[in-house]
Length: 339
Image (cartoon, rainbow, N blue to C red; front, top):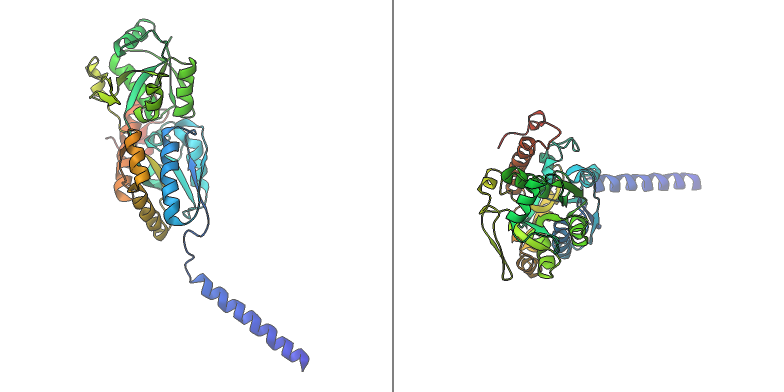
């Protein structure tokens, strides 16, 4: 009798567990229920890193979990960090902090996918400026360009990695002016700017947002903007390089779009949660103040609208790189349409 009762009890327990398991399978687990990781593909202190840290801090408040930001640098066009983030489960718990510069990873032979495998969120961007070390013998963009033409390949110019927007802007500056620099790539804008401040390189091309404090502090000397108009930086007017070299308009300007992405096949309901948190973060006072103080034009686009922008960037940048002779893979082989 006792044995029979034990058997009945065991069967009942197993049946209950099976029922509970079946019920659990049909219940959506709340998202997020644990911390999220954002993998920034560029170095700490650069524009992509800083923008992501500011926005992630605000998103974390809405999501109720921590968002841990880490940096995974290296590879052409930030391919190391991008590959690392994409290889993680597509469950909304790994975010990739990136920028427009990543769209050239395919034509640099470092990324086997098109950019349409991501779903994008755009924080904003800032125009690029050409600056030099304070003790460099150049006071105008013409001084620099004419010396680079007279002494080809002797002036060291730095930017973030090969294929980045800053590298593309350097190539465009060379092609539009006839200058010839010696390009030195870095893992991000911050190390490139540090190299310029220490005299390791002479020329630096990064965004106004990234250089603003260094320019105001006299640690970098701005010579020209790589947009058609001049730029007022707290009372210091930086002239447009287009004024002296009109042919730059054949290649420039190239827009900057800093933000982040999740894998496109992440469950839609989880992406909707991220959309809502992002929308609120972009309207927060902390982000609005950051954009104003750091000279970022804020965007806030996400989902289909942001994806369309990145598809256009991929087309524009990939073919620009190919036409400038700096691509390793023909965009046509990757089915990237011409702009």
